[in-house]
Image 1 (cartoon, rainbow, N blue to C red):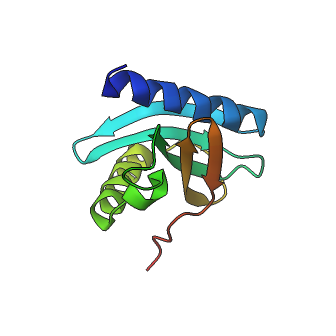
Image 2: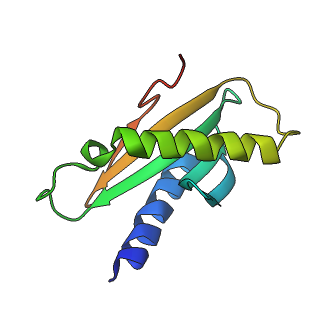
Length: 118
């Protein structure tokens, strides 16, 4: 399996997990010039959740959430801003950034993984 196929595999696991937990999928793989957001969904409380999916088959490079740098966070925030500007009619309560880290088939859902408020 190449990296793209692995990414799709882990994203599909994350998507199924979110759906089972009452999330409504809005968009997958939203791209901007700053980067990509893997999954955008609404949770049960109608919060807009931007989800970064990190999958691992081994722990040689640590768990997935450890690979999220400040540069990646900045990219996610800028891409989320573009998504919001291009979807002005979307109704939601709050915005949240989550990380779903998958090692083998074990899912670790980190809600509000980083705070972007100033």
